[in-house]
Length: 417
Image (cartoon, rainbow, N blue to C red):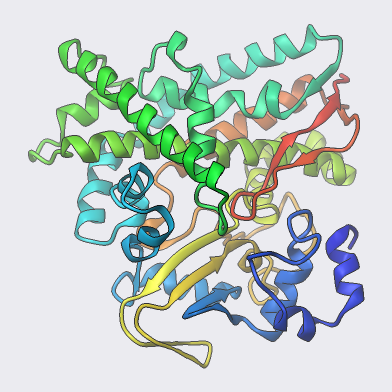
């Protein structure tokens, strides 16, 4: 084990690391390498108190239980987000979108969104994703070999794919990425006033744009086999429809849920294959391992590191009694390296089976767009390696300074066939 996290582990034993753990601020070196801290917590304080009625969970079994039970563990964030955001655009967005709601509202909205994101609709995306990835690879090759794997490749894929899903005109997609980054940035455990204002502005501007897009689509519906927005406007055969507010806020959610996390998936996978050359050689020798390599990248460097729930009643977890209204932070990154579930969990193994990771959560709230993310990850990695099997990093990657979302803002690289 190397990096700042390893230095932290050497400075203190696991008990002391766990005892002093906080997210605000996190331990030194935590953003670069949180995994030694996660291990210390799993082994010494798997249900760790991190604030007033707030707890941090790191064991796979505990997360599985919480994900499964929407009666005991609520996803409704009104009580948590009201003091954080006030009654502004961010509050209204996050308390209306799919991910931060409970049944029956969650069940109804998810069913309508899932009806517009069928396996057939996802499969229909593949030719366009292949064409997009090939175009990006062509453009990178023209640079003479020096590229940024995030800016020039990973970040360019999900925005275009989601833009295609909603049939957003190409010349109107420019602001989508910045809007998404600002909205998701406001979900970090601690915010500056600038981050809060950027998130507010992004939701406001995104909603204003969507109002015009929806009005145009109502006047001129698209092809329902290719246009998710047209399908959402048409509703379900049984008459199920989203309200106008639900429609707009969940279109924002669709972009946000599939943007930064998929960018991180692709970027993390390419960085890992450079960091572990034996696994890259193994993948080049057997391209059929690409799907399982994507799953292992999701486990080993989960794009989304944290989830949240609130206890709806008094409940016991791991021998700790938690009162009603307790705020739970679910540490996906820690659960995905739990030795109770994964053999040799600190090893990056592209052929790992089974691989019951929580990168897409689990239970009723499992990521509704995971098939799209897997499709993008598979095509991006497969075609990138086919074109540039000998690529190598050209300088140090720049890690995103986020706790919740794990990835890079820049990965300089040299492309070699």
